[in-house]
Length: 432
Image (cartoon, rainbow, N blue to C red; front, side, top):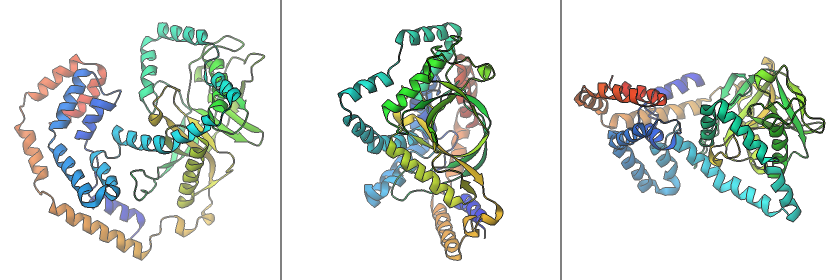
């Protein structure tokens, strides 16, 4: 039996804590955590339905029984899986907060404590806007031209992936799914191999390859001034794009950001006294790994190791240069730290067929195959022990609901914001 067949059989037979489209966890997300979850009426309705869901009490009872039977130390991963499955905002926040509080924040604090008085002054200058009045003027111009976009950009402080911000285009060639780490709610995340299209970028040199506040802040300010504040030869104000990329080369360390598409062919020249330069970024094949939080030197090392480990385990791509690691940061400084989206990227090429060892392409040993089959059978037996009429009961409940509910829902949708229409379309599927 091949690994693919085993995986497919596992998906079909293993009971997982997969999310239903209208699960109580998804409704709680829309009610409390999702900035795009709709208006007040929609949020209240989602909260009421989440708490009234027949699975809410069942899942809570099951989760606490797991902790009672196994203890918190061994039971908390399953406890979190039951209450907050992967794919929920709550789960993402839990994982982001865990890394931020236990590792990234102490590392950043240790960095700040090591600064002397002069270093602190340099830090203050590097992370603050060089011309506050110019920033305010740029915001006022944006508000006058497109007020709705300003609201969206402000709400991006609560989004992991910002909206209405241009990013480089790419095609995903392969997704390398990681494994769970024992004893933790965190997983070995998915590595994506992407083919990026060529683009033009604004860039500047930074003093070192350190991911310290003063080093990154200095580069960010120079690029921000060139694009958003109009510190260029044409005094042209451009919208900010993402991500900011910081990458070491044989000539130093460069920070860059993609030029907006409409300015790519006629980008304004940087001011004479500016250190900003326009660069051509060629088409590249890059392996990337996403992670939440803030970028510290130690965090970049951890994520780079995880990326290289995922590539080595997959065995189909070869790293071109381990010294050319790029760190991509997608969010504005005001974004909640645990929701910030970052990525590690390294250039790769696909290995030739003769370079790929059979053990690296998914051949499963007989012992591993038998062990996996035993686990699947055991899980399937456990499913049989659960309430056999759950599906039927849920269908009966739907039949009992008042038929006019759908009409009422439709009228409510028409009264709400356009974002609610998407939310309610999911709700109506529950009654179909």
